[in-house]
Length: 73
Image (tube, rainbow, N blue to C red):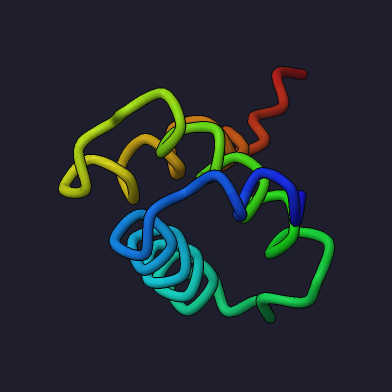
């Protein structure tokens, strides 16, 4: 993961950290938790694929949020 961060510009690193912090805050999890680390990995992938800053949280949520459990009996 560290090698991925080295290849990013300062602006991209700022986008990564802000997006992960916001995503974790909205989901009441710590950045150092497994969920936070998973979000960090995913948002680095998104930034490297040149996603716009404005869409990072939405795309991160779409990729990581679990659908609500619905049980059919």
